[in-house]
Amino acid sequence: MLLIKDCKSIWNNCLQIIKENVNEQSFKTWFEPIIPISLQQNVLTIQVPSQFFYEWLEENYVHILRKAIDKELGTEGRLEYSVLVEDKNEVSRQYNSTGVNGKNGSAAFAKNQGGASSPTPVKSPFELRDLDKLKFNSQLNQQYTFDTFVEGTCNRLARSAGIAVANKPGITSFNPLLIYGGVGLGKTHLGHAIGNQIKKNNADKFVLYVSCEKFSNQYIEALKNNNIQEFYNFYLQVDVLILDDVQFLAGKEKTQEIFFQIFNHLHQSGRQIIMTSDCPPKELKGLQERLLSRFKWGLTADVQQPDFETRMAIIGKKLEGEGVAISDSVVEYLAYSIDTNIRELEGVLISLIAQASLNKKEIDLELAKQTLQNIVQDIESEVGIDYIQKFVADYFNVTVESLKAKTRKREIVVARQVAMYFAKEYTNLSLKSIGYHFGNRDHSTVIHALTSVSDLMDTDRKFNATMQELTKKLKLKSV
Image (cartoon, rainbow, N blue to C red):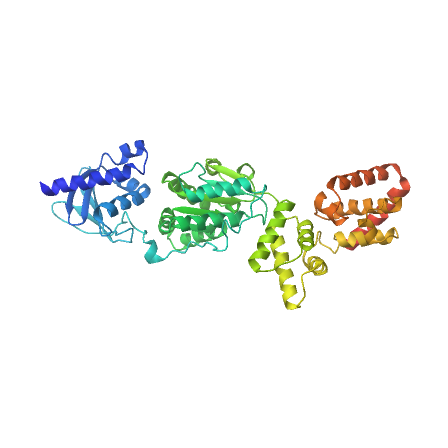
């Protein structure tokens, strides 16, 4: 009787722990029907009503059961399932696990009929949970953290949601968290930052970053080697899954199918899912509708092109990390000249620092211009803002300096407006950036210049002919 009492007592304590980690309906459905059978040394045996019941526990609640067993029986504790199968042969099936502290354990399947027993290997409830022993690599870039991620109006929602997820993975309503935006705007950085913060706060959690391409390749290899179950099992043990560039699942029906199953399992188990994409779910093409509907369960947050102030902050953060100091005028020039994406901006900074170091030069405005000219091409040609200014100035027989000056002489004003027009036409610079390159003028001045040139082209034939001539020469230069 003492053995039975201890068995029930241990299991009741386990139930209290389980109850704190699952909702009421799940507890009533999957844990109340379980009957504790015996406790021998550190092995607790529980009886479940069916094999389906056992498989559901194994797939959805292993981590909770492991937590309860560890607390009640210690890290050497083991769990044994007794699965009753009612069929015409009255066969009872028993699953024994020797999993310890979430470690890989060997399991045995005993088919008892008339006293005969023939052990056959089966999957342990705690199989593949030995994260320390196997030393799974989370594939996280340690350099990508929230500290190195510069917040701006362009990414504030995504960053705030990322911090909330990092502090309470799987608990917030932001599950899944889908971060979308163009190339080089910080989606991947933010995904790694979330993962690194979770690992910092919860060292025992299995956080995995994987690109969609790698996920697809792993699945293909699993198909080739008949290891689909191992592939599936591996991803079922992940606590936090970060899938980068989910748009590359498009058109891959079988890969979508396996990801759909993994997604469902992780989400139902309270695990955190983080994804990045180049567009919002409604614009993703070639993905199953049921998969897209799940992407919308949590929060979708976008990252946009950084504004001028954010670009200034990014440059400052990067230079601070490199221990390099440059003048504000150079920082402003770089921030105004590169307004496409963060990746391109960082690439220019690395090249600029390298140029200064190799040539033993100070980083001044001239070196910044030279470096920028060698790297950044606003179109597939040599036609950039500096070339346009010189080209237009030469044609109108004025100086580049006069285009940037405050003079209001008519010939200078017309040349300046024409140069602004071509800068808008042939570069990717914003109106604010164009204004900066013409004496730090306001973007409204650029808008006025564009309107004036367009009006003159419609009303003045001579001026229109001049613009056609200049356009042809610029097009020839861009070829």
